Length: 423
Ligand SMILES: Cc1ncc(COP(=O)(O)O)c(C=O)c1O
Ligand SMILES: [Zn+2]
Image 1 (tube, helix red, strand yellow):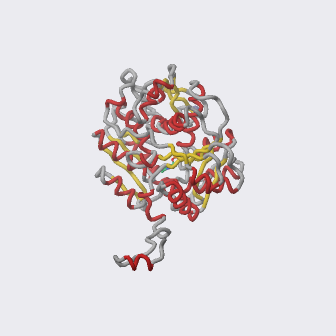
Image 2 (cartoon, helix red, strand yellow):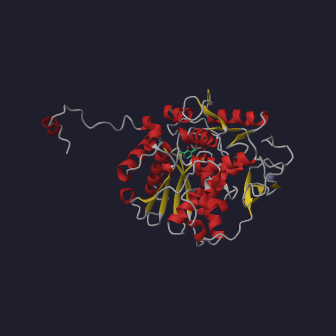
Image 3 (cartoon, protein in one colour):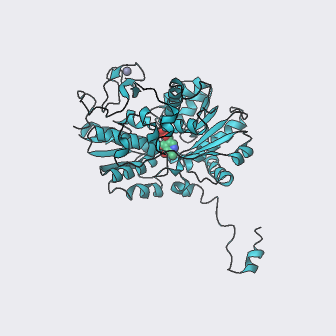
């Protein structure tokens, strides 16, 4: 069995290979396709996503599960014995009450969902765990991705643990720590001379040519994307089975934001949380802000851009799910906003100094946008708000290395210390 091109006939998989998933459904025309390595609708080329026949799921069953994303396995396209296969066991990261940051920004009730503590220090471990399960069930021989950095780290590590060959593709100008964080797990890190959109195009071409390759965010994208739902499930569970009023999420391809919304809708339908309004906000860096530009222009037409920002993990100039981000943010009464690279840097330092959390440029973008949403009156400061930190600052040290440094360099004597007048 192999992961093959779109047009191949559907294959049969072992019973329960995809858990309670029923079918793949087109987001544009609702056409249904059998579960398999498909990602584009054969009728209209729209993106496919996983649809389910959920059983009755209770809070108690979930709470009795492991302290990782598999506590939600009944709501994911994975087999019921998923924990038996070697994987990175991501998720169930901290939801921290951020009173200091809240006070600084004038927000009464603020939380940080800190996904930088995942096994490879970004939320990508969640999506990769679901993609790995699909790759395994589809009989893939190579586990691969085009990446802006964090995804490559997560794929390379998960592949090493699962004992499957990995090939990860990145733009060659990527931050050095992100390159090392992949190369340490795989000897097949491929640096491509081009931006992420060039790398992505190359990956699609390889996926069409080669047999047996599971590109996590290309030909198994519908399964991969479902992993981001666990962020939303966890936030609701950690708030005491309640949805927040407002949530701020970074946007690159836009997949994460749309899946957090999907998770909230599912929890409501399953009766696991009370149905209530919530607002979803998207965060971009101005140097790569095609979704924010479309939002502000009140249009659905997202014009691809050539990224030019220090927020390289968010540097996708032609976002696959951008249009659905617009849908979600408009439908829920949220917004999409963008900030300058200087504001991204300031966002990193602000989160670090107020909450002791070192975020990467994506988190700096999200915190900076949160600040701007308050300053521009787009966010209600009296409502319960969650901001997601999706990655770790140790991967993007250069972003702040000229903003923060030793306060003084002194001789090892008490008199030198007092002379420096530090406290
Ligand atoms: C740290 C971090 N945050 C957020 C994102 C955005 O994710 P998405 O492409 O699902 O919008 C990425 C994507 O690479 C990322 O690396
Ligand atoms: Zn369709």
